[in-house]
Length: 414
Ligand SMILES: [Zn+2]
Image 1 (spheres, helix red, strand yellow):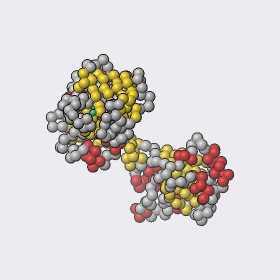
Image 2 (cartoon, helix red, strand yellow):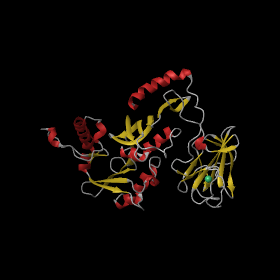
Image 3 (cartoon, rainbow, N blue to C red):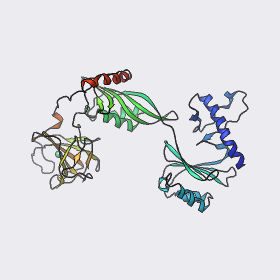
Image 4 (cartoon, rainbow, N blue to C red):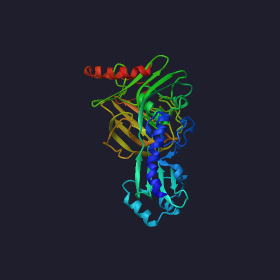
């Protein structure tokens, strides 16, 4: 039986795949992971039995059991419990460390046991840690572990919607993943304050969708985005050349404004810049020279621009704080951190968006938040009211190439 299976499995698989290919008119490997049996009636009089294929195996020729890794499960014990000889377990794990480590076997992930039809002998174990690849442990043909990568195809897709309450709700309603929502935010972060969107505003996104077996499993680049407000429309076109990389408006001006609008990705403003605020702890009027962003303890705090760290330390009122000089004119400060980020010390270079610390309530603070302060020309200012001169567009000689790329994508955006 073993011998027959070994010989006929590939033949059966090929026959099965060919027919699935004809049925589905898709790529041949699309049959590999189909669980359902194809509808035999539409095959007419073909005298063939189509095997159901999983991980490349004709499952009818096995006694198969699907499982989920539970707390305390160890790959060695599972193999042992299923009758694999201890010496074989030792050898297979030892010889294949470069492919699979026991620590790769994680709680909650799927594995499938393929046993001989009489259920006595474990022939294969397939472990599937994610949709991108799986491991085949082979105990029958040639003892070993193989990693199989599933081919990912990229498709250009669009999604659009209208704001009812938030961009997250609007996009989730269209079936967008949190990953795609975060990428849209990255593209538009310099132009749009995602916490103050208005009902009725419209968005459209052109993005690369990553697919396995015709199913979207992730989002790649956001290639273009459009956000329509009552008074103006923001367009973002992704342009990537060795010397230029990022999002540009239709005229080829970078959307990157030099400073992010907020030092936190997800937050709400709990207190605005106010020169006559009643201090919540001191209970007297004391100007508030910053903007407070409330967020859960431990939320990463980003530097709003490139720069050099001036101070990264603790003081009584500020708690753990970081102060960054961005250029001759602009300096920012971030207070009340639970802790300062790794490598953030006086003199360190930081990039825009880099994590410099984590939200906390050290110093004079009532709850977890970051007090964000902005100096322009040595004077503390309300950064929400600052307007910066529009950045320089791409150089003239770059515009034809930019326009060419833009024309290709703009049709999808409109
Ligand atoms: Zn504050």
